[in-house]
Structures are given as C-alpha cells and as structure tokens.
Amino acid sequence: MPSRAPFPATAWTRVLAAQADTPESRDALEEICKAYWPAIYTYLRALGCAREEARDFTQDFLADFISRGYLHKVARERGRLRSYIMQSVRNHLSNERRDAARKKRGGGQTIVSMDEMEHFDVPAAPERADSWFDRRWAWSVLRRSMDRMAAHFEERGRAPLFEALKAGLANPEKMKPYAELGAALGMTEGHVKLEIHRARKRLADELRSEVAATLETGGDVETELRYLLSVLGETT
Image 1: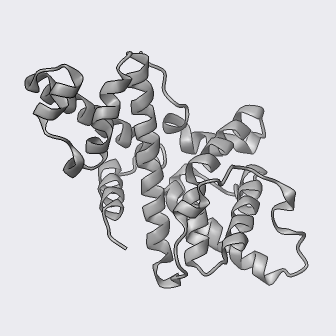
Image 2: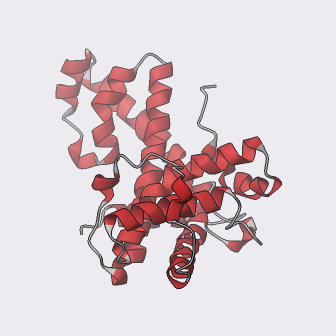
C-alpha cells in the first residue's frame, strides 16, 4: 500500500498525545502548524492586524500551541479542530492586546516558513473574518489531499498523468477535453475517462480522510466536507 502523510489519520489523536510532551507529539503539532498557518494568518489579517503584526501573532500562536499553551482541557469530543483553533486564535489575540507588558511577540521563534504570506493576504474585514478562516482551512484540506494524490501518482511512476489531470480534479471546469488529454498522454479517450474517474474517487477518499481526522469522534464527515467545499467555491 502506498505511504501516506501521517496527519490525516491522527490529527486529534496527536493533538491529545501532545499533552505527553514527546518528540513524536511535537512533530505532529508542527505538522498541524505547517498545514494550517495560512488560515490563522488570514484570520488575523481579516480581524484587522497589519501584515507584520499578523505574521508575528501567527508565529507566536503556533509557538504557544506547540508548547501546549492551548491544549488545556482539550478533548476530541469538544468538536471540530477547525473551530477549536479559530477560537484559540481569537482568544490569543485578545490576550496579547490586553497584556502590553508581554515579551516581544514570537520570542524570535520561527515555527513555520511563511514565504507564501503575500498569497494569503486579505483586507481587514472583521465581520467576514470567520468566513476567511474557514475558506483558508478548506484550501489547506484540499492542498494536503492533492499533495498525497501527487505522491501516490509519483510512486506509481505516473506523475505526468497527475500533472495533466490535477487542475481539473480541483476544479472540474478546468478539465481539458478527453481527446486533448489523450493525445498528450498517448491514451485513448476511453482510457483517459477511466483514469479521471479513478483519480476523482481517490481525491474524494483523501478529502474524507483529511476531514474525518479533524472532527470529534463520530463527527459528520460528509456535512463538514460539503461545507468546506462550498466555502472554497465562494467569491470574494
């Protein structure tokens, strides 16, 4: 069976395990931070933070998250990891602004690279901040699922096929005509159609796996997935 990234199967489990403060739990939290910092940064910008302030607050929040500052009384039964992190970020921002004597934000720590920060910039719009957070969270869910898809095709020696299909998998309107794809890939139209069907099914499975890992035990995966896909398709 092809290898998979560790995050989808164990998101909440690893957050809880982080309370044990083991090297494995720290690695898991860092994985969560890398996956979802765009949602955190975007949320802070929408709440009114200036660009550099939002960068500093994001790194500071992630540092506190990894050091278990936001893991008190956490239980998977409390609900979505998405909602938990969003509320934690809001609380963090409120506390930081109340405590003017707090040490310099971020403490000089760089938890994740934020080289893509410009791509996630949004105008201040506090009334839409929650929506912006959810949209960036949904984008991260899709990106991680697509990354695992790319790894799967790479392991099968079929990276060119994935490159040809990926834009259309993420957005069906961008799927090229089967005849055009077939000519480029040396396949019949029927074979292309079959590969697209298989790829879409696998992507749906990857998305469900990613979403299920961030829900409470017994959470409604289909409802959460439908919601995330709906906000991903919203226009600004």
